[in-house]
Length: 292
Image (cartoon, rainbow, N blue to C red; front, side, top):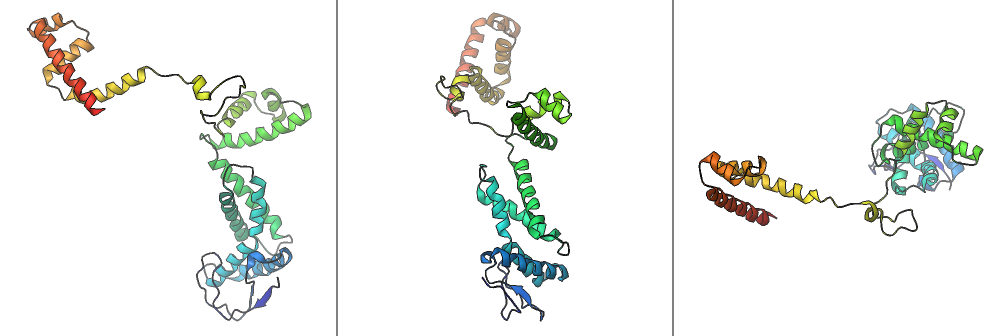
């Protein structure tokens, strides 16, 4: 594709927002009709001119937005190139590209065109760092401190290096000696690394001889769970009882007094206490079943 350096005769549209911009000043702006289709060599040449022009434009002006937006589209291939390195991750590629584009924008805003090196050399580390920071901050299934997240990367690299040198998995002590760290800190970091990803309890176990999922083999039924639910459901029902019935329930099932003892305390017969208890328990049972 041929890149032309012309002064626009029609109002161009912002490549990012689609907003119509006014015609550029008399000094011609380098333009390409479809920046994403520009050949790499032409894109580098055009980017150099646009960076020089961007440096002289006032931030917030339509011309500044046009040049900055064109630079983003001219160099979006750097984001896609970097994102492909992370294609093995579970995150959607569109999300990775979106995060990488943020890194590209930061690189464009920070790049000094007067320095003697290519923009791609400056931008690629910034884009990669932004994507890695995204994984570090969002990919942990269980939140751990930032220090432990960074320690995981250090331990992983040291473990790979030692495994190649030793032809086996290194021990925590060997990793600690390699990094000149305390062994306990290494052990703590290795444990924290286990929070990076989780597995479903419905997935098959690692043991080939075992049948069923992890949950089926290790999960147990908590028999007291239903009792806790019933107790929580009964609380408002008991609270609504008359004071005397609530006191009799407390003495019978809280203090574990016999019906005769309750009758003696209240000055009534054991038979009368029995009738009150039966009536109260029936009312509570009916209300509980109705609520369920």
